[in-house]
Amino acid sequence: MGFFDRLFNKHPESCKCGCKDDKKEAKKDAKAAPTKAAPGKALPVKAAPKEAVNPLDAFPLLPGAPPGGKIKLAIYWAAGCGGCDVSLLDTAERILTVSDMAEIVMWPIAADGKEKDIEAMKDQEITVSIINGAVRNTENEHMVKLLRKKSLLVVSYGTCACFGGSPALANLVPGGKDEIIDYVYKKCPTMKAFQDTQKTPVVPKTSVMTPDGEITIPELYDTVKSLDQTIDVDYSIPGCPPTQESIAQLLAAVAGFVYNGVALPPKGTMIGVTAKTLCEECPRKKEMRRITKIVEPHEIDVDPELCLMDQGILCLGAATVGGCGAKCTRAASPCRGCYGPTKMVSEMGASVFTAVASLFPVLDGDPTCNEEEIIKIMSSVKDPLGYFYAFTMSKSLIKRSVVEKKKGGQ
Ligand code: SF4
Ligand code: SF4
Ligand code: SF4
View 1 (cartoon, rainbow, N blue to C red):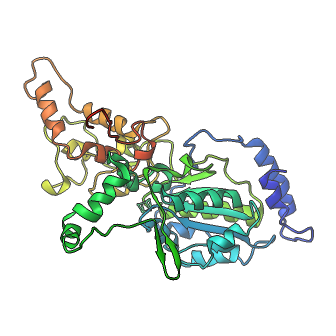
View 2 (view 1 turned 60 degrees about the horizontal axis):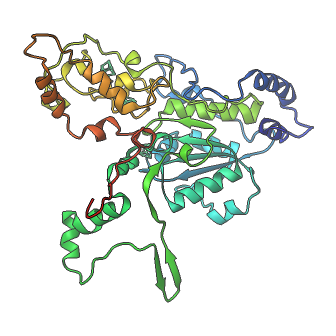
View 3 (view 1 turned 45 degrees about the vertical axis):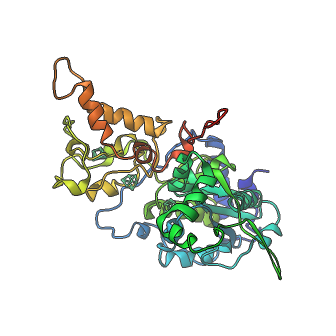
């Protein structure tokens, strides 16, 4: 019996909601649907009506508990900034209707479910676990593996969970966690001033004995991983944080399923993205101008209609999957690639680098764009690795910087 069937069986025989008919339809749909979507397969993004103020208006308030009883929902925050958790709270009154639909068994910022409560549950007893943040320490890994075991569905929510996000920039520190801890607790100017007042440096320990017993904290890993590099994931929602449109699609899919038995999207679906690049939904005019220097938005008077790349501002729209509605470029800020690559692109940084390089065609006898000039322009990109892999380091081919240890030195 598949998980769709197990969930459909939550509806009692006496149920009058029409779910039996829906069940037949849903089973047909499920049969017709591919068992596994191609990576990055997109749900169609519906254009919001012009007059709509809040995209969640398209998602109706839910009428009480589902016919088969409440589902169980867990929300976990791994290595991330908390913005993804807040984005769920941004659903305003819809979040209250979610509690009509679901018993929230864990949500550390809003509900009281504890690890031991999850451990006590039967395998796959949780219907959906929504996990945000990357996997960076022993606790993250333990919790996501536990939630995977106890859940029918796992949603990778937000860019950190999907691609490593900004926490994965730690992978660019060659000495890994030791170098990071050493700098953060001993060498950065504010901590150095403090440490200079101590007899021995004060640094975090993973285990400390106290009169009341042992206190432990999670151990950092050298390499930050995305969620799907750690556990099997059913759906992904990129965005830093995901947009309200994406959240509306997720809620609509889950509500349609638990209230009406509508089949869920195929496994592997990336929710809230289009099949095209961000450039294709960006309203800015592209003239493919040759640029002679790279600038930051605050250094120029940004033309409100012209493509930012045409103005010398590095924008990653050409290598980023569409779906956000070009939120940043509409506000005169370059795209930094938080939605991740299109399915045609496996290596985001290299793809962006190629797109940028194509703006500098080398022509015979052209004194303004010879090799020396191009190297000079490209050298002005501050922190190219950090810029091109700002959100996707875990999923890059590079993965991380390393220190090569040789005899007699590094
Ligand atoms: S994806 Fe962005 S908003 Fe979400 S946890 Fe990561 S950094 Fe924060
Ligand atoms: S490069 Fe950036 S600004 Fe230019 S069209 Fe693409 S997304 Fe828009
Ligand atoms: S424009 Fe780029 S960085 Fe901004 S929200 Fe969209 S995908 Fe993310």
